[in-house]
Each structure stands twice: as C-alpha cells, then as structure tokens.
Length: 191
Length: 191
DNA sequence: AACAGTTTTTTAAACAGTCATTCAAGATTT
DNA sequence: AAATCTTGAATGACTGTTTAAAAAACTGTT
Image 1 (tube, rainbow over the protein chains, first blue to last red):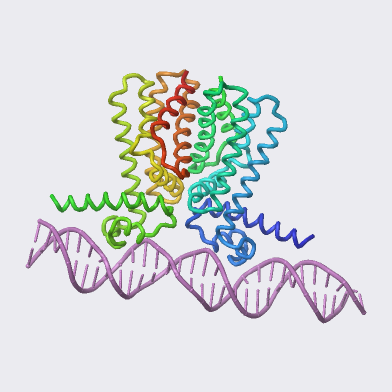
Image 2 (tube, each protein chain N blue to C red; image 1 turned 120 degrees about the vertical axis):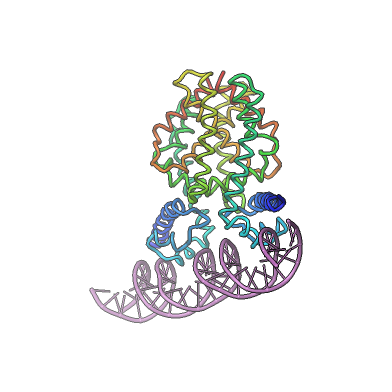
C-alpha cells in the first residue's frame, strides 16, 4: 500500500516542480537538475520515476489534461441546456486552478514541442478531438448546420488564443474575468 | 554597393533556411550546423552575419513581422469601409505567402520562446500592440463601446488560435479557405 | 521490540555526447 | 594591396542518462 503511495507522492511533487521550472525557464532550456532542485530531489530520481525528460513532460501534460477533463465533467454535471454546457466548456478552460500563468506557459511549451515528439503529439490530438466533439455536440442544438464549423472554430481558436496570450502575461491572471469574457464571446457567436 | 548586396543576399538565404530548419526540428533542438547545411553555408558564417543563434532568430522574426505588416498595408490601401479594413487585417494574417505550415511553426516557436528572451519579447509586444490598435480602430466604427473589447479579443485570439492549429498540421494549408472562414467569423462577431 | 533479509528509493559520480561560439588562416572580391 | 567573406578545427562548457553503492522502508519471524 505505502509503496504505491510513495510513488504517487513523488510523481505529484515532481510534476508540480516541472510546472514551476518549465514556466520559469522554458522546456527546451530547463535542465533536469533545475527541476530536481525545485522539487528538492536529484536529477537521477526523476529518471527513476519517469524514465526520461520526455517521460516527465508527458506525465506532466497527462496530469494537466486530466485536470481539464475533470473540470469539464464537473461543469457538465450541473448544466441543463446546450448553451449552459457550452458555458461549462469555456469555464473549465478558465477555471481558477487551471487558468494560471505557469500552467498556460506549460501548455504553450507543450504546443510548441508536440510536432516534434510522437508522445506529446498523441496527447495533443486526443485532447483537441475531445474538446472539439464536446463543443460541436452543443452547437448542433443551437445553430443551423451550415454555421456549425465556423462557430466551432471560432470558439476553439478563441480558447487557444486566450491561453497563448496568458502565457505571455507578467501579472497574475483573472480567471473570473476570463470566464465572463468567454461567456460574452459565446453570446456573440450564438445570439 | 555590392558589399551591401552580398550581406543582404546572405541574410535572406540564411533566414529562409532558418524557417525551414526550425520548422523541421524546433527552435530549441535545431542546431546551427543544421541551419547552415540547409542554407549551403557553414555555422561560422551565421555567427559572422547574425552574431549568435538568438540574433538569427530575432532577424528571422523581424523578417516575418515585416511581411505581415506589409501585407496588412496592401489590404488597407484598397479597403474603403471599416468592415473591409477588418477583412483586410484578417486576410493579411492568412495571406498566401504567410499562411504556410513552416511559417506558422516559426511563429509558434517564437511565442514559446518570447517569454525567455528580452529581444523576442520586445518584438512580440510591438507586433501584438500594432494588430490590436488596427482591429480596435475599425471596430470602433462598427460596435457600441461596451462590446469593443470583447469583439477585439474574440478576433485577435481567433487569429492566434488558427495559427496555433496550423502549426500542428501535417498537410499543406489552404489560405483561401482560411480567409473565407475568417470573414465568416468577422460576420459572426459583427452582424 | 528487535532483527536479519529483502525490496524500494536516493544520489554522487562517471559517462558519452552535444553544441554555440571563437579564431586563425585561406579564399574571394574590390 | 586591402577589405570582405568563408570555414575547418579548436574551445569550453553543458546536460540527459546510467551506474553502482548506500540509505531507507518494509517484511515476516522470533
């Protein structure tokens, strides 16, 4: 039992340290030693748990993807109309514990590196397809078929674009305001 | 005269090679030697012309920023109404000679690295502010003040988001379709 | 509680490459 | 001849990963 526990604890510590360290230095530049120092461990222990630097990055993104997926599931549980479920998708993207500068930074690094790493690009494809199908499912109930694809792309690209911008921010973000803005964009697209 | 000419020719050759090589390998991973090979030159000559790898990246982005700025100026020259000028801003972003996978890749790498390089982040700020003020200026003539900021963010994030997605594409892009889609988004935001 | 045996965890040090940059010497152009 | 351009080779520093050995945690037995 506690054998498993230790591994889980280390995994989480190292992933948190990865988010901070990659945010501060960039994925391509940050070293295993820096991440390890952030976590109060040694570079070798990261390889012990994750196999490689790429494995660590994959695990970190898996962690964030899971957070996003769960946040979306929570919102879906209480939303009753297609429009509310669309709001829920946006709200998940800008949830308090997801929409932070370090996490948007990581996402940025993830996007930049995905084309060059089969393991990362696989995650990227899966996540994107999932969000896409959710958005599309709700839009179907709200728009005529001809406008579906335009509206979907507008919304999905909006979410990506906001994160992109957030990753460049010097100051802490305002998730509440981001959610409000996202709702306005939804209303703009679906009158 | 031709002393200057040679420098210009090399600059352009090396920048083109940079775009191809960075697209293929990623900025953090590509080596000076690979870029040089792509250009049919030596790594040392890149340093001779650009001083450093970072200098080369800065010059490359300066080149692309200029292309974008000029494309926008061309569109502005013929547009007569605020809506047409908004179309022109979008069209510039998705112009035939700008909206290609390698160039969107570079832009992606640029975004990812800007937070860690003062020289790149300066370029990023300048470019973003310029696009922002153009979009805002046209929107002012089309929307009540209260919706300005929402519409601007929707459009600007849309453009970023489309590029982000384009950078992941395996196949060649379709600039014409992208422009058509962008027009539809404009029409969605400004009925 | 104590202990020997076993497994899991940790890390210092070694390893094996890598790469941006510099430099000196030669090639080319003016 | 002078200025400009080019590059092979040397430099110097850095880094992900492996290894071997020690530390810590756990196990069942006494």
